[in-house]
Image 1 (cartoon, one colour):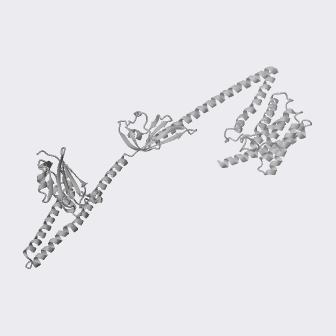
Image 2 (image 1 turned 180 degrees about the vertical axis):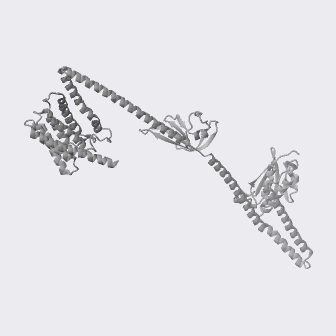
Length: 578
């Protein structure tokens, strides 16, 4: 296509150059054969033809300058003859000005030379056509040679710039294209008028009748041309409209297909948040049927900024989604529509909840492991300290008895055996406490509650105690548990406090308070938070066992400082009838 366009351009320039040469030759011949003053206008054709020839050549600035000079000279000569030969002078002046302004444009696309050359051609046609229908020696506006040369000059001027002239068919709509389309009409109108006038003159009609007939014919032709133009315009508009409707339909189908094929739920709304369209996935998430109208009013819109959100369904339930809302602006930047997108994250939420439950179980297991480790460490510390001491004492005393049995008096033997028995009982008590401790830790200790006389159990706690408990004071508890509680409290008071040790029982409504009080230094403040914990104060199992046994029987135990000195351990149990 590029080679064809290049060849056409060369052919067009070649024809324009030939036309220029022909016009110059015709001007010379007409000037030589005509007598003054008829030879004056023809003389102007010589520089005009040479100017056209130079304009058609692919030459440099000097040749172009010479062409412009000759064209301007032709325009001046033609203007000089306007008084004696008006038609010829005006046509030659217009042609010369057209050649001078061949490369001058107005508003980018409008070429100044086009209307000038068209005017020159119309004058030449108007002068040439009537001659064909008049007497053998007609008179006219200008000589036929001049008129023909002007038509040839106009044709050559049009072809001299094929890439930018009015015949350039690829040019977009504009003044140049308009002139190209209207140029045949502008040339045809005077030609038709001349033909009609000549025919009217030869038919013997007068000038008024000829004028009227000419006007009527031209009006009819104009009406037909206008009707044809309107029909063609309407047809083109209808064809363009059908093309646009088809393109719009194709785009709408493509957009709908794209919307429905998305894996994310999408809802499109107008500026007033009315639902325009939804896709298949949105209907699935909200529980709408394929052709069911949207029955959620107002439509579900996530909060500003989007994020995790619970999307309501038709059945009243909710589905977790990741929601976003995008605004579609108009030309002024105002919201024209909204596009809300929802991604189902129910699986992710379930995974997070499952992971959270697993984390909770792991934390609980870690806590149990930490507690077990602490228990193991405390138990190891107690066994290596508190259990090793009596075992070591028993071993030393037994070895002494075995080695010096014959030399030891009876009273020393009895004393050593008594110490061995005492340490043995201590070990047995410690093992029993450990066994009870393990049972308390595993939750296998249950209380068999029954009415128990408090004074009776307190009297069996040991000698040397000051007991202030009424005989009718009875508690609802497991008798064995209550015995262990009182023994441990008394032992703690005797071990870490000072005598006297007092046991006091008091009824307070439907509760009974048992107080074990010593006269020692009391419990240091730094030990109070863990006073009822495991392995407190060395062996430390006594108060831990007391707390668990009391709680297993529905009671409480607490510590209070005694006045003026000493410690008070208060056990509260439910009162029972005798």
